[in-house]
Length: 122
Image (tube, rainbow, N blue to C red):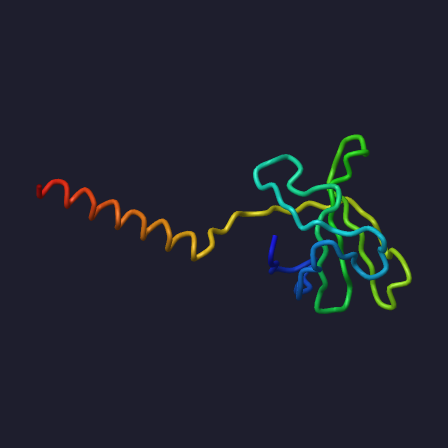
């Protein structure tokens, strides 16, 4: 995961916390920012961290020790002296192809087409 957009309970998400960093007030629990779209647990037990326009920070993560297992979110607010709340949440992640990947695919298909055309002319 290299970026994030959207809202948390109607509040704009402003930034993704860097991989290996903790959200303020939730140290030493660092996030890994890894996603697994399509799986039951779309995030790992380390999850990802983000901040919102209102100044709060959140760290959704996969709680594999709960029964049933579920996604839980730690929320902290300024002055970040500790966890404000830790509740079950739901979210969905979608794969978005990078423009460079699409360009590379189209370029490869064009080269393949030219190659076939050259062979047919011989």
